[in-house]
Image (cartoon, rainbow over all chains, first blue to last red; front, side):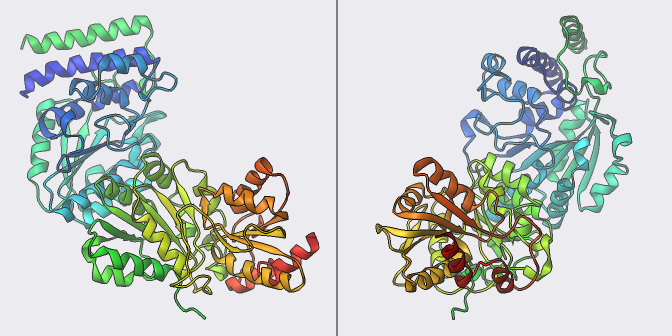
Length: 278
Length: 312
């Protein structure tokens, strides 16, 4: 899909994400908004998974390590026909529903459960190793949060991916710089982030993760990079899309009031119109 | 005296099938020697993954491999596997329901002299508490081989604990009755006895010895090898309890959440009888060889027989 179409789609998906959160009575809205572009670009332009190929041994694999950004993931999965948006909205966070606040692999298109941080990357290392040993062409992707990088298991996975030179593996770090307690750099510093990954044997790409064009290019570069796994450090804005939420850690998990909902909706509409008029 | 430890029986069984079944994978965390898996790593390098000293990674990567159709066997000392990587077992194996077989080697007090960090006296309780996770403690090399053959046939997670040292044979090539998730009767099934001994893993041998000693003194005893701690063979537990005056469990584990707790739960529910649970204590276990540790806590043939007599 072309960038302009994706730009327009991203505003629609932001709106879907917001509506899912309103329907479910809350969600991790800040991280949903920062990660949404990467998720959308992956699903629209790079992953070969469709609802018809969820069991194909040659399908690409995706694991949402930052599992709490589930509402954005629902929006993307619904758009890509894995799930039905009305069903998700009706069921999200409801008693006994499969549409829970983290990935649930009983739902079509979701490979692995997550929720506890620091699991996705090591699991993807296993998937990538399986692909290598089988001589398969599929690629393996995961998206991590930057606060998540404080989990030691992330670095165990990073070490193994570097050791086994898993160039079929691509990790995205949603580098929005905030976590629930405040700035990631105040809570637990990750600098120098790129150098850390490089030292673990990774090819490092840094992009503006609010930019669809830059993300799209980075995923293509990762695909053609041989001999090392690639990490895309995606510099994003928590709550991206509405000044009401942007860069405010209190929007890590939040249910907008009706007033806030209307204001955010209007901001998304403005964003969409700006793209349309370009 | 048998010289083949149960861990070696696992390796031999996997070697037997790995040539035909390329989806069998062995993963180690710098533990291939202590797991007795070096022959497998030498013969089937493409079916192995070394992770270094990183148990969390070991389990998550095994889950990733399983999700792509592999049959991973992840080996690590039980003391680390069931605690350091517990959350990976919970989320990536049990919750995602992946076909990962976790093999806890040197279980219980196999590393007796190395202190509490190296004792695994909580692993049964921890693993059994996870939905989807099965827990097996085979008694001897023959049963271990049968168990692994059975586990190769299914696609669900399981935790298997084996000890480090060879244990006396309970069964033989010709006589090793085995049905997955059904306990094996070793003595006096369907007979009215004074004592039902229910045990698993390395404690089966001393329990049998105790039964012999007690019988010589005119005390009738049945013995049940409950290698399948979860799913516990409830029918066998109930049958054993119904036919006995008292039930005695024997295990190499903390008194909480292990075989004894689970048996007592079933007996209490299905046919209330007195249940005595013999186990390691709820305290840092004394250090020494495993034989010394067992003797200290009365987990030998003589020790078990003595306790049983005191109960009657």
